[in-house]
Length: 112
Image (cartoon, rainbow, N blue to C red; front, side, top):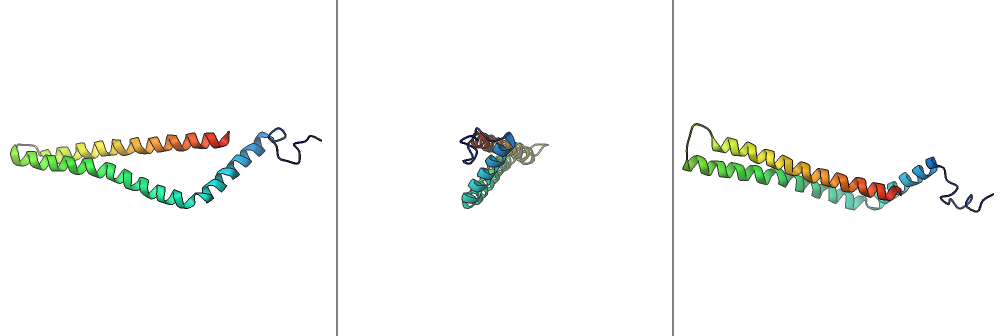
């Protein structure tokens, strides 16, 4: 019998048992960090919300100002509101994508 058989060393483990051990370690870490995870999630929701709202409102405000100064056939307010919303959505997508990549890298580091 090898020295690692009773101690759970990496040499005697099958790929399945290493995967199960990695998942168990992730779950334990998530349980320890659960309060931080809730606040982090709420903070991210706020960040994403503001990253959409600010450009949208800025576009609407600029549009109202332009409509008052240079009235025309087309509404500057509506056009810049839509442009601001599109910029905000792209900004939010950027933040979510960045956080997703960081979470995947952290998960890969934990698996190793």
